[in-house]
Amino acid sequence: MMDLRTQYMGLDLQSPIVVSACPLSEEIGNIVQMEDAGAGAVVLFSLFEEQIRREQDRLSAIQMATTNVFAEGLDYFPASDEYAVGVEEYLELIRVAKERVDIPIIASLNGISSEGWIDYAQQMEQAGADGLEINVFYIAADIHQEGRLVEERYLEIVESVRSTVKIPVAVKLNPYFSAMGNMARELVLAGANGLVLFNRFYQPDFDINSLRVLNNLQYSVANEIRLPLLWISVLYGRLNASLAATTGVQSATEVIKYLLAGADVTMTASALYKHGIPHLRTMTSDLQSWMRDMQFKSVEAFKGALSQQNVSDPAAFERANYIRILEGAKR
Image 1 (tube, helix red, strand yellow):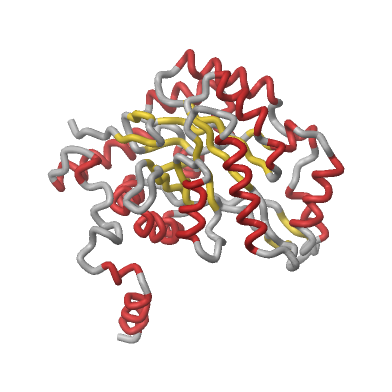
Image 2 (cartoon, helix red, strand yellow):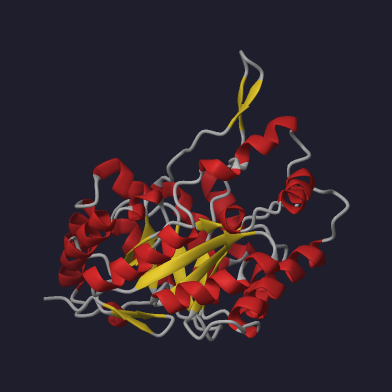
């Protein structure tokens, strides 16, 4: 039997395959099924700041600042009565999940202001959450807003949450920072125990017949792994924090690639919508088969083997390889 154990933010996991935040975890029966199918941990669906702070004046101002490119952009923020559960239901789900399963349960907060996090992060810890993932869904669409102000917003939120709870805290990042490596370092210095790469902002689509902005959901696909694969490879071994890979994890192939890059865990949701929760068993079995074929007895034996600091040609991650790829396309 291959040893799939890994550590994520100091938590001991029996598998590097983790269920990422999604509505599937709203049902306790699904969480039990996820554990039975081999999930190393479950990140619960996000509790939105809009659920826990009904300050409509503040929310309206933020909506206008971040969606002023499209008049219909406000449609992306559901009305306060459209959310599936409230705070008490979320906290009760944490309590029940901790009673029913042995795998770590990681709560998730999705917000845009530092005030919206602190009390509820503490309540999630008190309810029994093993960790907390904070997901800052903020699109800086105001062309007058400077990048440093966006970065400061993230850092303030991390510092506020870190000072409030003792459980480990992960930050789900977007890929749009101009100096991603430095921002990752700053977040860790601010108190983040883990970084989740990357958040998939749900971008608008247009209906060209009705002239409407659409807010339809598209599941991730395997070829989306390249950007997070790059940055996990670059950051591995350079930060005192865990790295989690999300986006495009459809099969064991993506799990293996992310682990080779240096991820401690890989997170999947789209694959479970497409194939069902039992697909976790297939991913786990295929990962074990590959390890057996490659004679790796444990995840630790190959984690980070293809990171930038471990490959024989580190330039493969930089400009030199970009030129080689373009030259190769001419042949």
